[in-house]
Length: 206
Image (cartoon, rainbow, N blue to C red; front, side, top):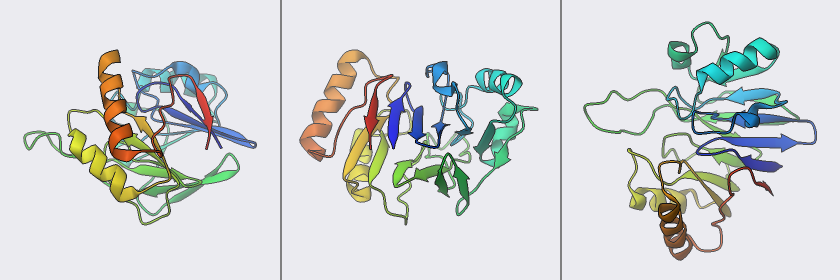
C-alpha cells in the first residue's frame, strides 16, 4: 500500500488495483483526487470535505463513488454519495475499507457534536476527528496531532492505546512550521520508533 499525504488530513491510498482518497478538505491539495476510484469523508467539516472540489469531481467523473456519514447531505447538496456507518465494509481498489466510530470529538459543550466515522484500509486507520479505538487490528495509525478539540496529551494517549507499529501524523494544518517541529520532536520522545512524518505530497509504502 502506498500512502501519500496531500495536506492536513487528506491521505491517498494507492494499490496495484486502484486508488482511494480520504478527507480531501480545503487545506488539501486538489491533486489528491486525480484519477481516484473512490473518496471517503469522515465528517462534514470543510477541512475534511471540500464540497466545491467534490462537485467538480462529480461533474468530471460521475462514476467516482463518494462515501461518508448521513450528515454529509447537509453540505454536499445534490452531489450523490453513499452513506456508511460503523460496521459497514466497502470493497474498492482491490482492497476493503472498514467503517468504525460514530461521533466527532467534543470541541466545546456549546457546540453540537456531529457524526464522524473512521476508516481502516488494510490495517491502516484514519479516525477523522475522533479518538475512536477500533476493535480491528491496526498496523498503521494516521494520528490527529493538532486541533481545537484535541490536547496534545490526548493525542499521545490515543496513539499509545491504539499501539500501532507505525504512526503517521495528520490534522496539522493549523500548526506553523515551528509548531510542526515542536510536535514532531515531542512525539519522537514520547512515542519513539513508530513515529514517522509523511511530508505533504510525499509517498511512503506501508
